[in-house]
Length: 90
Image (cartoon, rainbow, N blue to C red; front, side):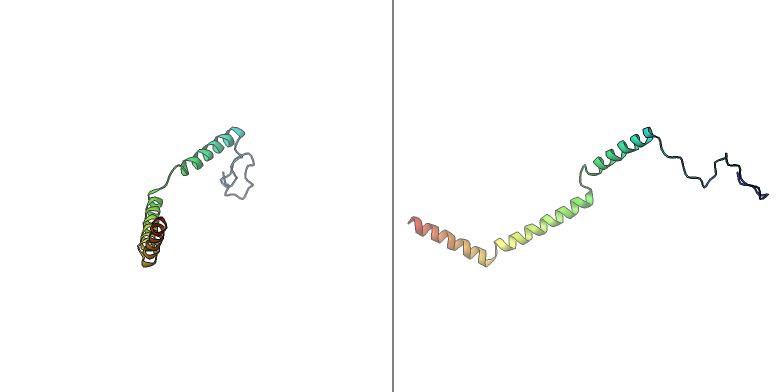
């Protein structure tokens, strides 16, 4: 308890500024188990925001792939490939 008369504080009384005592081994073990469990739970699945970003990325990749496959050069190349394969068989 702080004094107002200027006397020194009693060293046996805990002060508000004093650091907390270090945790016991049992408390540390319990805290460690809880932190490990939290880390495992945090990686259990994707959140809604991650699903949204993944969906947008997949759609963008599909759009790019569609544009590449339906482009003139790819269609011409596939046509030439099929023509050459059929000419070889004939």
